[in-house]
Length: 406
Image 1 (tube, rainbow, N blue to C red):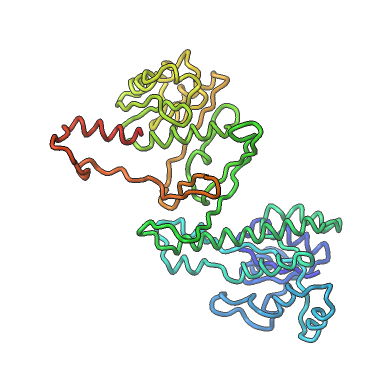
Image 2 (cartoon, rainbow, N blue to C red):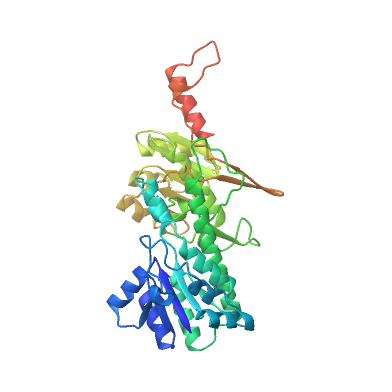
């Protein structure tokens, strides 16, 4: 058995390579991976150029794009004419591909990245290797996720890698490539006019499974939009049981609302809508006013703060049951007092990052409706007044508050 190793993320690759060699697998590797393996071990590894008889060129842009690589991957072992052609052309089979792709998403996450830097991190050979190996998965094992190294190594040792396992690995490889290509396409799209493309590929990565959805009979999971997403799914649960589907919806609503305000603001959320909302320089006053907005509906609701929660506010909550509290942080004495409540979930939120590339997606029968997120909160001096009577400065402030609330 021969394996081709070409990875950007080198997590665990050395141990996996050792496992392969211990199972009698011969190794072929590309530039960076070859250097890493030979620097940190004495494993017998052949350079890709030794296999192809051709050097890596164009600063590594071309190294695996060669018939001796893809012939070895794509040949069907159950077709005599395929195998005879390999013999005629002096091509050896490649039975295992270990590959993950250039860090394009991580590169473009930098606010200072240039187009040239982004283009250099678009992988060409890697996706081709993965697609070729995955297409031929009955005969070629494809591993793209470092988390799979352990169990794949064990199954190879026990000679127990089933067709179902091979197919699952192939599916992961195609999914990896699909997500990668979608990220590149989204980056290259012209978003200045905020028009949506005729074909929209939206890729989400599972963050965690949920016990159930809106109702107990519904399966559910949480997915993030991209690797640098910051929001309720990336928050720290400081206290309490795991968050449910409905908890997450309400917590997100609370955090989005209070994040709209520069002034200290408190929101009380029930069924994803504010039943109380108030801004005041004194957090205790802001909380009291938000609670008084609808003190009955506040029971069992969600509290949102855009400032660290203080002990005076926590004391004022006495006797009122809240499901969840979200805030950027908590003063130590306030957190200690809150943790004495058994049935409350305490969440520390990260600052929201830019949502300009996110989408607002709603399900309808037959498909989905997609729109750009509603990010516009015009300054009041840019508002167009269509009435003869001009609003007062106080009325403008009330209008701004109301606009954010609704």
